[in-house]
Image (tube, rainbow, N blue to C red; front, side, top):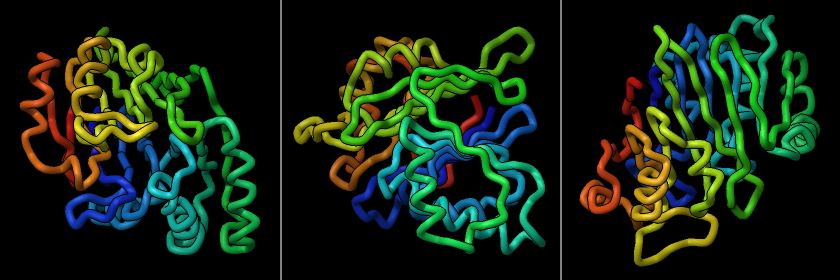
Length: 252
């Protein structure tokens, strides 16, 4: 499993961080997780063939997590020598199919002719190839879906969990239990918590409770992007910790 950090920031403008976007490559499959502003360009920078994206996973419908989705679909139709014949599957939380219908209505013929299947999820589990995907709803101002991706190699489980946006809740601990890597939002500094989001120390506590092997702090606002985050985490969580950066690749 290899995950590429396409965007590790929030809706607050940052010259160092784009909005949420992650690429998971495993088992011969290419999965895009969230598609916030800047994802389109980052995919091109990493030489990702848009036609090679097998499935897209959206956590929630806030602009900083979904705004580049129409651009990605537009390119699949017009800039790849004709729309790919393979069906693109897009997953999202409850209500996503209704949102996507509104999106198609807004863009009209620009996105017509692309084979797309939309799946809404809540507390679900399914297989894509040899990857097991599990979802649970998180605690945010909109319905937000956390994702867990599991794959067994030589009898050993490789797994990645992505929180999306959430305040601390039991579901993120459950979903992240003993995962190999937790991509955990830490958008708010400890001294200025924000409803529906997680602070650095809260992210560390979630990783400690879930006994994750690697904690990756992401979705960092400029207010919490001041350095020293690893030291804050290490006072609570004894495992490995990485502060995400755009363009970073992590092998699980």
